[in-house]
Amino acid sequence: MSNTVDYIVVGAGSAGCVLANRLSENGKYTVCLLEAGPRDRNPWIHIPIGYGKTMFHDTLNWGFHTDPDANMLGRRIYWPRGRTLGGSSSINGLIYIRGQRQDYDRWKDSGNPGWGWEECLPYFRKLETNDLGAGPTRGTRGPLNATSIKTGHPLVEALIRAGEELGLERRRDFNEGDNEGIGYYQLTTRRGKRCSTAVAYLDPARRRANLRIETGAQVTGLLMEGTRARGVAYRKNGRNLALRAAREVILSAGAVQSPQILQLSGMGPAGLLAEHGVAVVKDLPGVGANLQDHLQVRLIYEVGKPITTNDQLRTVWGKAGIGLQWLLFRSGPLAIGINQGAAFCRVLPDSPTADAQLHFGTLSADMAGGVVHDFSGCTYSMCQLRPESRGTIRIRSADPLQAPSIQPNYLDSDRDRRTAVAGVKYARRLAATAPLDALMKREFRPGGDVRGDDEILHFCREHGATIFHPVGTARMGPASDREAVVDQRLRVHGIGGLRVVDASVMPTIVSGNTNVPTVMIAERAADFILEDARTV
Image (tube, rainbow, N blue to C red; front, side, top):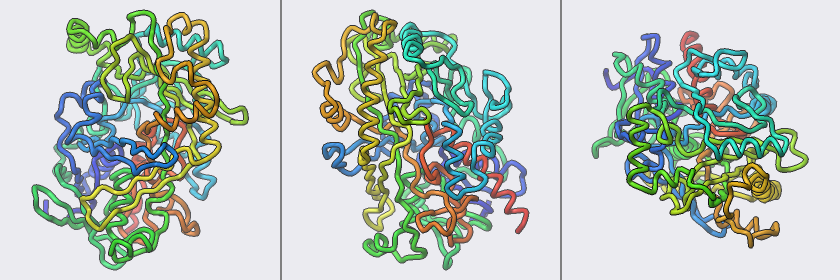
């Protein structure tokens, strides 16, 4: 390929791999996919439970930290983000969730026609091969696998019975539009191995002559001619390089780095850009604003029987056993990951739909991805589904290699605080319900001495952490909305030849995990881009 291609895709993550495949599929256009990290060859990427190993990996993970958050007792919170082919889909918890019908209808009603549930549903069906079989809401011929957990676990079965006693319906499919209920998660796995977007979308496209994939290539800014994007500048092997786009540049660097690249390139709040000596190309106040994330609060219980993954990981023989189970049969704990049990529930009485999500893990550690405890343990991780609090992503300087300022502003809203407290109480109710109570030996964290609402809220501030779902920092909206960054076809307002396609365009966070919705956004965007190409 020459130094000019039709389309440049920045970031080979949950969205970028989809775009690389779809834009090169018809053979008409040349596409270059730029990824700052290495290829996805590390074996821990492909073993589902392996994200405990990649959570803090020096090269596979950006390893961001937030600024001190006053709402979280001044703590700086660790934010892992994928830095390899597949991006965060190569290091995430593999949970296959779409969210609720109302999430997408809310996008449509906020000035984004065409983004309601009924319009998005065909793309959800297009992207998946669901082992539950075809149906009005399910697909069976897509690149990304939705795989059910077929082997029951006594702790998860007890969790489901406890949830039923509290009025939750047992579900095998949380992705039909209404996710309220309890059951096992589906996972992005295929035959016992992780099915990242690199595996699902990039592997089938790698050998196309019109697709160029560059790893170790960190984009440092956009090449602008007036208000049109003409290409990108990037750094590789210590060299500063440039690549031009004959048609479009597409930012798919995620909710942290897409706004960072925009700001470094002169698109963002004019005052912030001037502060750091960046020439203003377009004053877009919404770039880096509207940051939303799901805050998880993890309750840990000691289990009275040695039936947890802690027990299997604590001994050499236990590790050997689950290793052989995976090597020989692609089954067992290594093929599933950490979180098996799912619940979507209402913890506030005025919530019209489920407002909290439970990730139930059959192991326990001081933090997600940490070393397991030396006792039989399980984890009830609760998160609010639709937080009202909003944070920011802002460059710290004009240096493109300096990590941006991340201020999540967790628990800033009164409703968010009340939901966090109510979520902890709900998890405790589950644990105290007969089917689970018989298995729970003691509450290790927060512990029985934490009872009042103020004490519970303090526990949430002291131990709450990201559940890895940042969105919204280049949100979609009409041109009349000064805070919107992209239009309904994901083109940056007032800028030619530039789109943003990743989780940052979500106006509001979805009611669940964000990986699959991001893949859907990219599938839709690919159609927009190809449709627009035919009219030029």
